[in-house]
Image (cartoon, rainbow, N blue to C red; front, side):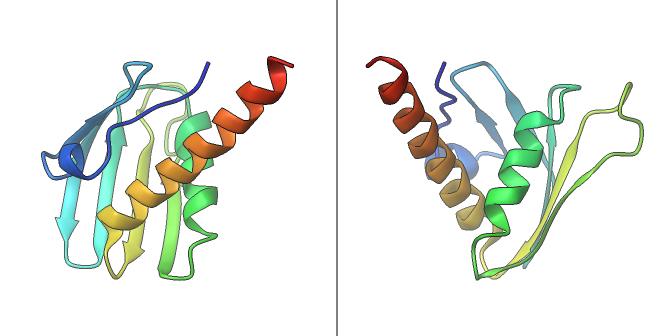
Length: 107
């Protein structure tokens, strides 16, 4: 299954909904700092996004808060010149990677 998310237009509305019904809520959006909370207890996708963000030279910091792994929702913290743009770019790059894997799996 390919993970899909709507990008810039949804980002401006304080949440994203992906093709697998994963939602995020913007907790903090101030200048260079963005904190989003994922509506899940699974840390897999937030960790993947954080790793992808760290590949972006314009991102100063990206990490997932893991206070109470069993009971809390993961929060992704991003510090960048344009953190929402960086987040959208990271998600798009992951989509491309998953699309390539799906294509290979169909061979």
